[in-house]
Image (tube, rainbow, N blue to C red; front, side, top):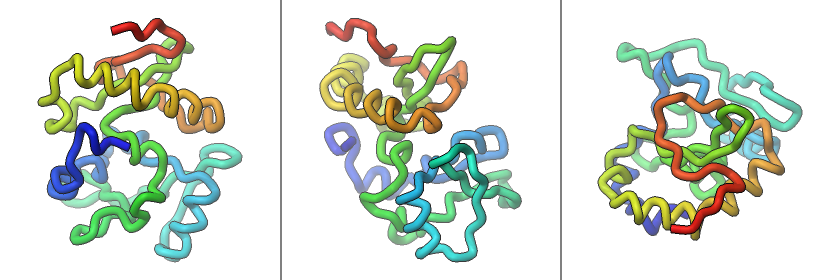
Length: 165
């Protein structure tokens, strides 16, 4: 979905989106029932916490020496073990489906340096033309996956706001 902005090779070399610190552990990917079933096949030892009726999170108990929790689905040589079947939040990262003050929005993680190098008008047009309809439709079907706004990531678009550029 994001190949118009990011080259797969760039993401494969970075993998920052697959690392979580104790500060941002709340943003680990939400696994719906279909993804959870696949993860259990691939990682039978993984443990989960139920977030909602059709939403699970990886149980995080141990962090590495740098206070990070690498996603259990990350294979350093191959990337995500789920390939194209990865959780929705992973497939749209560095864009974030969030809610602030009762309003849904699409924000941009300030951690993805490759996307931050893009002109703002390119990012806004991409969100308008390629992403917003898909993201907000997904939010309707999976409200448990909407993250609380972190107060830091720049908001690119608010739901139901005119998106004329």
